[in-house]
Length: 425
Ligand code: HAM
Image 1 (tube, helix red, strand yellow):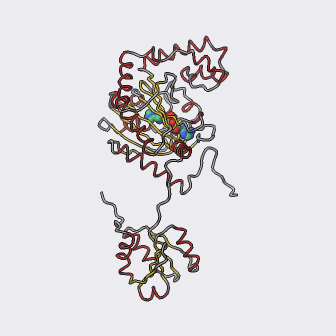
Image 2: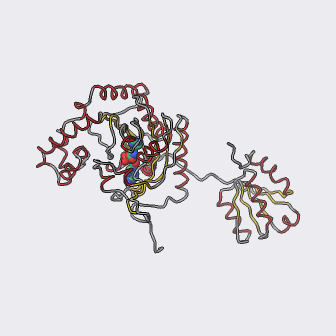
Image 3: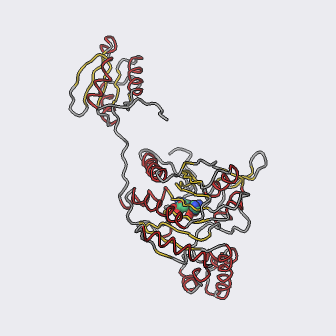
């Protein structure tokens, strides 16, 4: 065993799993880019204040932040999520709204590690800034829904709720606080502590002791303003029009404090209930302003890559295999001839790997078979002297020796045409 291991709550994403990971992000990117969202790459760390806003009493912000003083005396935090960074970027750069962006990358939360809950975890997500229209809420939710369909997950359900406008939310939190205070004798110690900080989060308790008090708690629906209620009804109607199934759950509270109006979660029925949220999001109309920008409506979601792939494992979907190589170059000469042949192959667009260290023909043939390549190009002393190469079809074992100047056209006739590897804007 090596003397160092990964820290608790972190893991190495090894090959071939990392390839599957990247393929998942590609499916996501293709889906949202085709709906007009452009990629944004915010920094991994920000001033603590970007995430820690006044009055935010959620665990993510109060307990789980990886924060530290840097050598310049700045109070820094590793990002626990992307949304606040995107809003900070909007406030800083003032792009023309509507601003539709997508992202992918790691986030850091000092949580208790367990299956599906990590201290470093990845998300893919989208955010739209500058549009106050219920039709956009439907677009955003539908893009999350479509992504799960695209990767073949079928056991995912959509849960939605409205937290109302800032005033509605405030009145609701007050009513909840009063209600839970009158039921404090039935609440667990943990729920009582949560009640002190944020009555809304008591609704999130999964402790059996808290279940009956939660069941009788007032529901947000009765506190929605006329506008917020109309907005929510329009979102539901839009989802109906798109035939996207959903469940309204008035007890849905999210783990971050900036939400107003529409909130939603995607729940996997194939994961353990404690970590079954594979994604979530909602509206956060006051956040850009809180971060020093102009009053700007915002909505988005983030999907957990780690959990989504765990759900794919459970449902046996989105399988991945490393794409087979075109060519494996075998070199028994140890000279630069094989080096330049391999180089040329790659330039002409063939995927090609090779053996090193002048190992025996037998061992290099084994490596060629293991690589999954369709063709081996064999360079021995004769080939090197005569500027030829021997091309072996690894499935039929047929082989032929040709001048190296004909190698590319020969491979095109066997493997089909390839595009030279060059960036085309
Ligand atoms: P969130 O609900 O905190 O929302 O995280 C979104 C998703 O990230 C979760 O549903 C889950 O799949 C995954 N996730 C969260 N924490 C962990 C963890 N410790 N380990 C593994 N996966 C995790 C947000 O982050 C908001 N920024 C979403 C959003 C975007 N709201 C508006 N726009």
